[in-house]
Picture (spheres, rainbow, N blue to C red):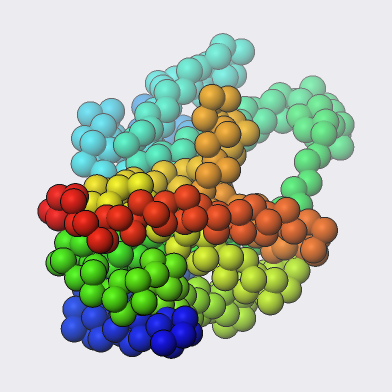
Length: 390
């Protein structure tokens, strides 16, 4: 039998195994579909709305305190919940009913009129990082706007015109022009990276399981006989099946996001197709590398799972890699999703074309050389089965 015939034989064998073990279906298609539905519906509104924020008005609903409450409630993000006491607000925040609250102290309005400086206290639920951060931002904005409102009233009393007053209160006007996401839509930004990262994790774990199960169930020698005693042909036959499967899932994501859901893209959807295919191939290469380094299914899957989870952080789409400690910044280059993200930035956000993303494409191609380092070790493990199977 020639090599191509052996590859086809291994591929047919793998298809039979996939058909006999439901874990492959429930480990590939189901998690990705559920993740897609979850993220696209969770961020369906684009931005968070009606975030419950408490106001403890100890100033007995004075003109000033009511104005601050209205300013906060008029914001699309916040839903104001009024409390009579600090204890009630703290109890609700501890129960997760509100993301944070502000205490407007007693005699605030009188203190303002008397040129004294009242102190506002913010209490934020730090257990919910996103909700707590948003609540703090809006409460701080409310306090700053209240400060401007007070200053405006005093300047009016001194006879300044509206133009002069605004020049003193806000001498510099800031215009914000978000690149590639004019609506500040969280869905556009987060789902575009989270879903490929989930797919990469699925690829690594499932392929490790597929390669490791040959040793776990003692079928690795049969696999080698089917491949003509060539570990390269054996791996190629398995990848023939999984690459097609994962590529279909990945391309489905790309066309779902940038064609059907019309996510903004400055470049072209076909360049993102290339980015996704490179992510699939580089993730498969990492899976082979892990099972070669740890020829025990349990250890390899644990290492692959840990690596995949860390990839979410090292990709840089939540926290810029440049802001991480210097000692670990260089580790980011060892994650395919990091290069997928940088490719995405150049194509989707900036539309720079080939000149912008070719280096990231090369970086992902370099991952394909990793399996060559572990092939001999994996073949020995397949032949001798001298590693624990559990």
